[in-house]
Length: 146
Image (tube, rainbow, N blue to C red; front, side, top):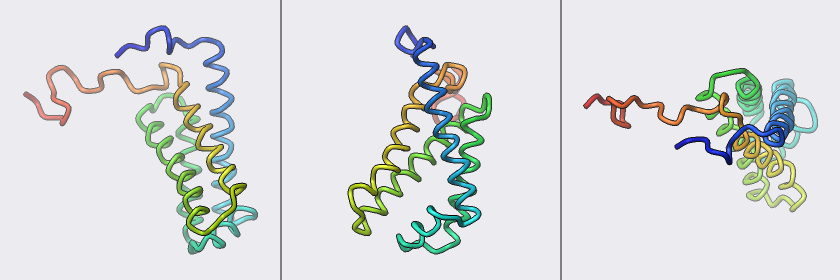
């Protein structure tokens, strides 16, 4: 699978990538710090949704690490996991509001950040993506030699 003309790093793609990535990284770092420090508005929302206080420490740590991974140069596999974690966090937040009877307005922030994370992931330049064929020609997909 080649990048082809659709994924060539045009100016528009690069600007869209960096703008959405900056927002995602900022949300991860700021939101993670707020969780770690148990500050408003995030910590009271977490406890209001029924989560124990220690979940803020777990989520805060994961958010900060994800933000650093997405912002760091290279490390494409780590970035894939970080983006997955960001999406799981945001979709989990929306699901938590759904489960506790939250209003429609409660879904907007987490789903918006999920959409921004997906946009950042989809518009990554080639240097920030995994190679097309990470498995060598002498290995099968499961990692065993023929």
